[in-house]
View (cartoon, rainbow, N blue to C red):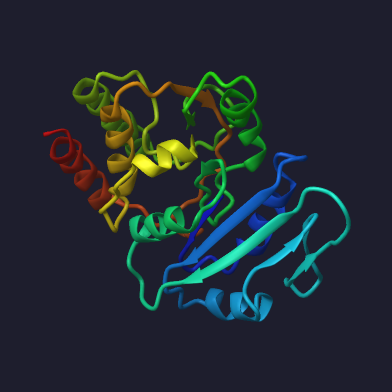
Length: 250
């Protein structure tokens, strides 16, 4: 699990706890990349990971908002923090997370609570158990619980996905969705260069152009945030995404 983090002090502890509960029976490695946070997130990470990686059967949050790792036999979750000296963008955090990841199956998780790791079960089943997929996308538009928010965000997402499908001959409904799960072999074929939110388009473009990859899509839940609650992406990122669609196609 790759978790890019920027100023998420309010949600990060809970996210790590929920991630540790996902996919029971599966050994999990969490690569947490702090992208130059200035809201106390970095200090919280230094306090909870004073000696680097920590492992346990489960990750729990105590009354003071700090982490507790339970011990015992069984499949555990290992959290490995990594730090950027300055804010470099989500793409840079994802790229460095990919370089550090050692797992057989990779998934990207935002550090807020907009997405539910419980939805990984159906995605993981297609890749690791049924072995019919190399890449699985989550989609917020398949009728699962999702918060009603900004109409212009909805239309922008649908338009970007439509343009992607036209340019790359795909049928995906939500390429800007955070949840993209893929095998280690797919990871080794990626060559991401975008530092910003354009990484979502570049990653999808490289997957679509690789040829021969089995791509699936499943519905997921979406508990979106408002800008007042910490949402970061804006209309400029949408305009950049349209440019990246053309740039990475040709």
